[in-house]
Image 1 (tube, protein in one colour):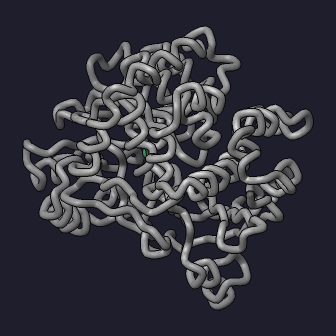
Image 2: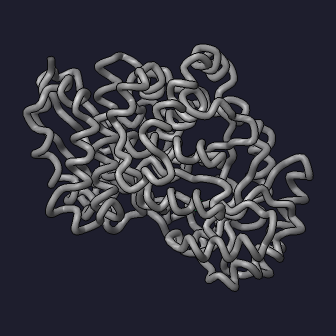
Image 3: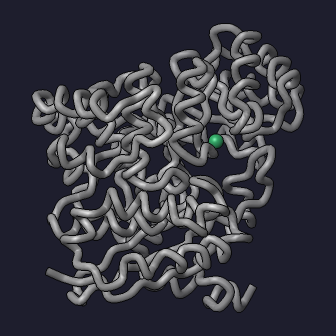
Length: 432
Ligand SMILES: [Mg+2]
């Protein structure tokens, strides 16, 4: 069995701020970036790849933090990695010194996400399966050993989680058949970035409708009047059969949130995302009470399972938006999917950025096949950018993510792209 012999981590940054792709009320000039981890093994054809995602500056800080975890993995076999991955995960998040930087949030937790994303890629590859397939094929008693229930047992016990997994076993085969045929529905954010002109938004809405999308997310938050004008324009462009949701990216306080959301009500929104601070569970409860039956979505900036526990239990998270590079990889994502299932809150994974679409395509398949069995009225985010840098980019058909079939977790980048956009020494950054 191959042994883990070394790691590398590269700071890769794409200059997306140039055309305002990704711009929102708070993040006005993002350069979508990845801390790109590679695990090298004694078998030179077997490597694991993983990323954390950032907006540019600070990507180097996450990369440096990742290096502190390498010694825990060097010298173990890939088989030991697989058998011990639950214990290794807890050892990392509970590291006696590094945990002071979190615990289980911020840079140190993003570093854990990057490392474990690369570990899961490696594990799926030795089983010669796409990651989603490997996970859903695993036995409930194996899966349960990957998970940590510390601090969430009051809402989800290990026994409850195990029962959910056991219960879905009998449906798995049929669900896999369905997912292979139909894929999993998505919504697009690519038409509504805040920095885009009205003309560009109308053109993009029409383009995505012609490609099969019916769900559009729009960035809002800077100017109430301008937002209302823009929502009117988009509603007129996409018609009443399509769905619109808005994302304020944490822009408002509680009072402003209520005022803005009430002003948007006439556009019949599917949800309002991140009206206020992503940590303010009680603030969300106040907003929810004041705005009535409008769905509130949040989660992409929730550091870990404990935040999700509070939001889900409070009733103020109506749409659960997990992030593949902020939660501590599969080990923690599965516990959040299980909690959301218990609270009957639909999961709409956060994507876009760089590599996030490649990741969420696995997560929605796992949620559907292994846990939830529901995919109508559930949509995964999709944004049409930077896929060309990946060796195995996601595939969308008629607005649906199609299940990835290549082995691993789909995040290997093309060598040329890494060399071009390596920061600060890649060709692009040396010349710009
Ligand atoms: Mg968002």
